Length: 318
Image 1 (cartoon, one colour):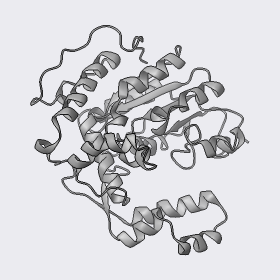
Image 2 (image 1 turned 60 degrees about the vertical axis):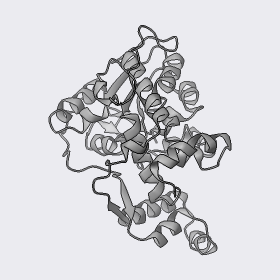
Image 3 (image 1 turned 45 degrees about the vertical axis):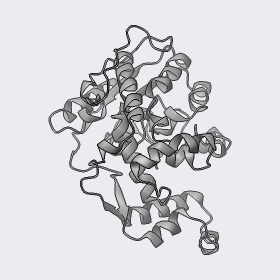
Image 4 (image 1 turned 90 degrees about the vertical axis):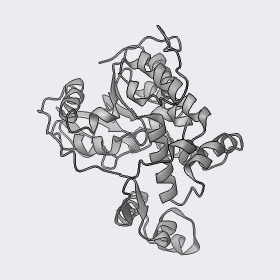
């Protein structure tokens, strides 16, 4: 029985390669991660209410010498997650992978389309986001929070305030998946975690959870929809964990990778969305020290780079 708690969390962001990083880290013999990525223990009320013993059971048996951690991008976005973590773990290490806000939003959009939860075009979905948020659409937080999840600085500032003594490592998505920089970037992550094992260099050509389309919309609707037939099938599978594993397995078989997935119609994206993204990027540079100049959209008006503090915090990195 595990009697320890994680000492590090990869908390975000969604659609920024966290699944791939999780798969890379599982290859490290000195790291112990949950059996299934994203337990959502600290972000989902129903799972948090199951208690700490349920959470610990999500980890495989591992030696006392290994480092326990979790990769779950919901933790950076969920309002209650940081305080819940703080109530159990005083000062863990945090890793945050940031992605160009518009590219992240588009990847999120493609994921929502694949699950049958989005029927609008990408520009239309961006314009409709405010209305969906105002209406408290039950699917908003999961499927339609395209630019809301891009409020990186606000989310990180909250963690920095709740964990004033914690160490943070900020990673640029592009550096982690660029053929010339990924080895050094992954080595930084392993060094930050103070692994006893040498970094096992991952194969950058193998990426997880890539944008895709469903091969069969009927199978997609069965997996993510609700029907009496699904309830009948589910009644023969008493374990929720087994149901989840089966859903992930069949969903994986049903995926067909999208080619040219980042050729989104830039000229049709609302100008106010570009301005929001540019402003966030410039503030994120100050907070993290990352060089994000290539994320700025050159068509928009230049926004003066903020100086000094952000949200009453100072940056602290590993």
